[in-house]
View 1: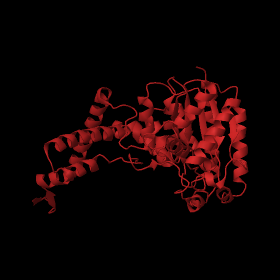
View 2: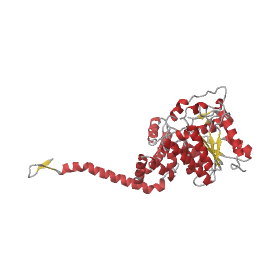
View 3: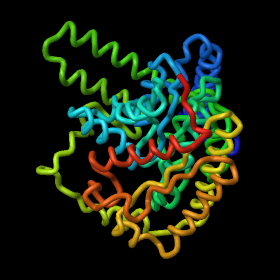
Length: 402
């Protein structure tokens, strides 16, 4: 209701003024509540914050890190690389042990351990940090984070290929789950790299500095997920038909879900020549090689150099292994890129005193050793490890003693 002033114009009533100011007042109240919540989380965080390697989604890196931490001892030899090396570890052991191997659980090369035991008469414990799609920046992120506090391996065997530096499907180190996971685990160098790479990265860093809840959002979602699982357990114990309830709670625990890997999804089986079928994956690699990003290539080479320098300074012998590829795969690479890659990675190894083994040599592998254009099958995996072990035995700086 309004009333007339002496000028004849309607004057707002108290109710009108209240209604007009209501949105502003509500915004101020909401801002105050948010600031109080943010302050409360900041004060309470030291007492409840989760483990730094907790994650709301179970990525390949998450599975590997959890298994590494359960080992109880530092491995003597760490295996790194993309799915090319992952197939060596998993398909090689599946063939050697004649049993299926689940990729999310299998992080040792039993075949390589037995080979090294014969050569060195020592118990050499391996651990695989090979992860599908691993870029050079991911390899550096894993090593510089997981082995920063001591307990370092004697040797790192890092299988590389051109895709790890020129993948068109990876535009930036910040785009990989592994790099972001290691940054969240408390590696300040990686966090700084994420912040300065893009405009969004810089904006994200500013928001994290201004808002504690935003900075710790992944921890908050991880805690919410743990609570949801606890509730799911209680409901499952008390009710026979809880499928819909469990599904709803499971949905709430995936607010920040990214890359996911689950048991049983990726099983390696023993190689059998009679049933083996070669897979043509050239279409996928035409896409991965389709655009050569010179900036990204230079960035990934720089991360490789950082990894090699880290190994040198930490007393870790790094062995770079140029992985075998089929002729068909090499023919679809951008012109000249393979020779540039080979010169750059071998030069980086020499500059840092690292070992470089080129296993992409004519005559070392036949087409029958491959499962597709880049991945070896179980038979090829055993052959690769036979050659690698012989090469390691020739290297005086790579030594395992009882």
